Length: 113
Length: 117
Image 1 (spheres, rainbow over the protein chains, first blue to last red):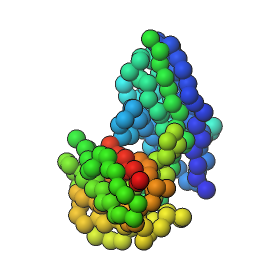
Image 2: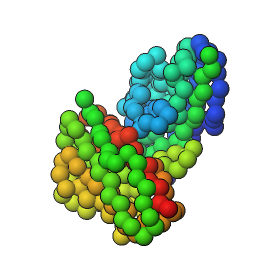
Image 3: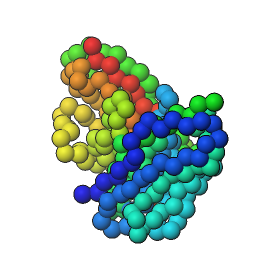
Image 4: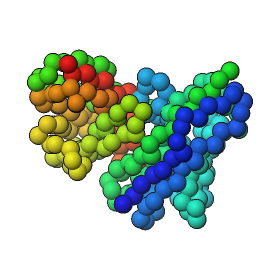
């Protein structure tokens, strides 16, 4: 079946450090890929998405590129801020599943000043 | 745009009682709504998918008689936890999709923290 695997957290970085959160997936067909972010005490927010191979999603300084050859969608940011501290979820959706999302286990990011 | 609300945000109830959680899409019509359960420091587990005017589709292992879902309109879905027990304590999150966007992007509510005593 379809699945998403993320690197385990927590990830602790200093402010202005470079961030990478790895995400790989297994899917039949051609899924769309998403990163969602959950700030403490809040619901999930869509951070970025990509719908086909080689697409790059970007938002708020975060980027992820849909790599079909490596079945990956790694999240990157060049310089993190304390306000980026949150849990990040990678997810996939296949159109024939009625929009159903399959989530990775989440990666907690803590950014220290 | 694309705001989803949930009510209540927190609820504490006694074991054996039923609790209803509402999920509303405030500025769009949601053809499909999803209900998730999230355990502490764990990923989201999809419980069921509901389409307006039809019965919900439950994921394997989710008791449909315990978790009643009603998607009565294009802006409202409700989840009722019947005869709640302490093991039902969790964070319940809904999401909504208009079905008109590329990749059927889901917009999530802020979640409801249920505590069963």
